[in-house]
Structures are given as C-alpha cells and as structure tokens.
Length: 197
Image (cartoon, rainbow, N blue to C red; front, side, top):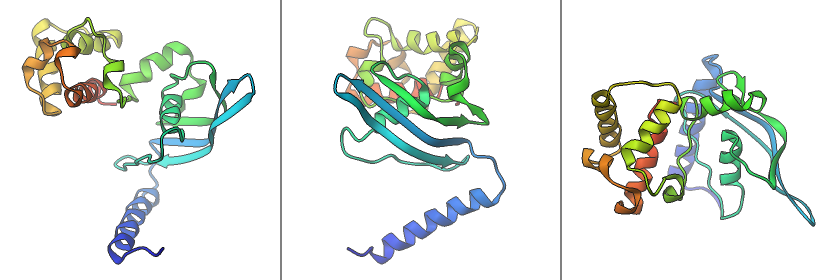
C-alpha cells in the first residue's frame, strides 16, 4: 500500500531533520550498536532483542512502536542496565554521551541512572513505593545522587517538578494509592526528570 502525500511529506521532514543533526558534526547523544539481549530458558535462548542499531542526536526524539512482547521494554531496560536473569545482554554497545554504559562498574552505572539517563515505566505503580509519600520518593533519588538541600529547597524543587508535568504541589504529600494511573505516570516523569538527564 502506498503512502499518502501528507505521510510522505512528514517522513521527508523527519529525514531532513535527522540529516541536519548528522551533518552538524555533532556527536550522537545515544548510540546503540548491534545490541543482542537473550532470555535463557530450559529450551534455549529466546532472542528478545536482536542486532538493534540506533543513533540519537541531541534534540531528536524517537518512538519505539511495536506489538506486545516485541522487545521494547527489554531494550529500555538494557539501556538502563536493569535487566534481571534470565535476561542477559549477549553483545553490543550502548554509548551515552561518549561512555559505553555496558563497561561502567555498578556504582558508576547507579549514578548514571537518573542523572544521565532515566526511564519512565508504563506500569507507573510498579516504580513507586506504596508506603512512601511522593515527595520522599523524589527526595530519595536526589539524595542517593549526592544532593543535600534544605527542606525548603527540596520542597520548592519537588513542587516545580510536579507542576512541570501538570500536577498540583499537594500531590507531593500523597501516597501512590491516592493517585490515578495518569497521575502516577506523571509522577514517574517528574522523578525521571529530577536531575535533567
């Protein structure tokens, strides 16, 4: 089936935008090279991600679209180095701002998360601690990355983060179960952007 004229124009504009970033001699912000992720099972390896290559320049956006089970989440978790057994990265490189994330030790990777790269999960409730107030969860991430601020400064920062994603400041004092699914998703976005990765 052929593409409509507007669709062709949109694709050409996207390609032109991508070419502009590439021709500016800018270094890629994120570069994934020949990434393979397998899930080891009793019946052998299940190839969840097979030979993925992706280059993303500053200012560009990319959307991963596909059916359920096609590897989108596995790819995102691989970038964050949050895969758990039986998943394992078999080969490839994940280069973020010139550093191969796969070569970082655990402590450097822990610090890179939230500071350099962040993930907003689809199932936001799974990312939130059900017994901690929203503000405490965001502060926990900041403190874990070495930020020490006064309570007043933390409060202002959290209110600003929440307002930036369209939530009122009073959400900071709430527990996850008091929020709708969309609100939880936005709290995830606020948390992921706390250190402006």
